[in-house]
Length: 637
Figure 1 (cartoon, rainbow, N blue to C red):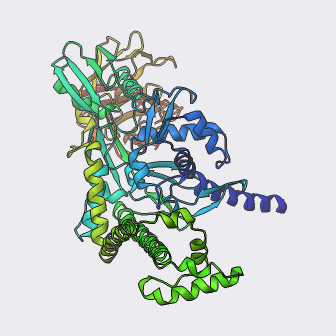
Figure 2: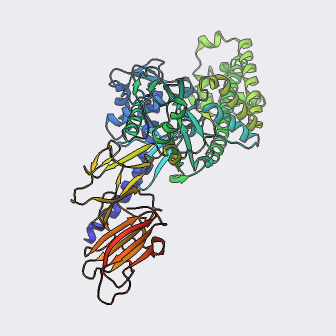
Figure 3: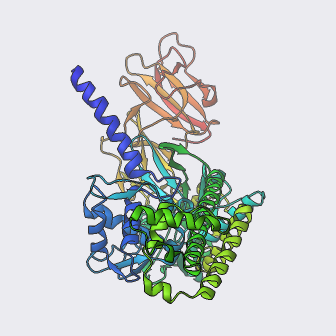
């Protein structure tokens, strides 16, 4: 047993760590899960401007991903449908309708311009060996946009889950500029499915948002759903409306799905129903309104970390500044090296230093001669030439020396010098450089990503008020049927959300959902009282003991119950004589006549009965045998 515990402890921890770090939770640096990162890196290596078969991309990615092609294809399709990073051709499915994509061999993809410009730089990319050691894969990509917040992410790991909602590209970049300039920011989600959103409880990514579908009124009898809530599909919305109709929460005549490129779900209303009155009912009882909870869990410094939108954006601003600074430093060093090489080459050719080595007998002396010859020109060079620099000079071909254009070379050096000055200026004010970079992205791509979800305050809907007195339940004691489709003398006005409490003459009761037509005499006893199980109605009862025939009474409220379960409010050796929900009921209790019994009857008010639990024993009214109970005033049973 000890060995098994050890195996479970060791292996489960490894498994949990792997799922968290390598599968389910995105990294804060690039906003990607490992499979997404591997797909994008593979596409970068394959990029030639042409579209690639998704099946081919999946096959190439398998060199880095230790799983099958199915999860790779699913992740690629998901990335493509987010609409930021990939160009596509073919049927990639539709997240809003739930339609699946075509087979991977029929659809094609490649990196989009935004991805090429902002996701890759091998000079800034840390690498590690792939799972089999045959290749290298990026630890993370040097992403220059807040991809984690742009795309959003969902994942379930061991003991934790993440749900990061997508945000608008333009708003995110503008918020980053505001952070650079020290201004406060406030940013809310933006869903690709559109709709209307109330972000008042978003709490900077740690709360929730309320989202509604966009519903238009074509006429008083026709509603059209044009946009649906994030996380739902046209199929799930239609199903929720059908279920609400079956439960009697909403009345519709027909529902039709005309969705093609755009969402169009048409709802026809029956006689007596009007569009402006049905809207709130749709929001209250169907997927036309949903609440989405955010949980911003991500990997940071190799550990799960929960942050806020502001914290993630601030992290990305700092990271972007570092990336741009490093790129500029690399560019500065590259320009300095080019200027050095061109200047050194011109000095070597213009001053005919190659002539000094014509009669030198050994290779070591050739290097020494050139080194000595260049000493007088060190002041013209950014740095002192090394052995490798001299080696490059020795490899210059005679043809190139004879055709060397000094003027052209000087112009090139001058142009490189101007670029170097520009790079150094950018390095001096990296905050301004970062702002200009973000503004450039906004100018180039901002119009491609307009906000789709409108922000609006959404008033809380009182479901009870909407459903109030919309359902009529009838009871026919002759047939024993109860329900909305039953005609009977006893009727109950209730809402579609209510439950029905049935009290039987044998001293039992049960609570049921609103039935269409249900037989309630299964126990061969009639119902003594039927009403709404509202957990506040007081029931007053008078009953007698079978052995002594003494009368007892109590009042009680049915506050707790399990649907369809049978409960008892009096014992089996007791008989129910009267039940009412009216506290003003007054009864005449007549006793059996006996010798020397002076009192033959009494008046008893139900409100005098003690309020007890439903299963508690009542209080004895009199030490006399009960003959009959008659209602004097108030409701009858």
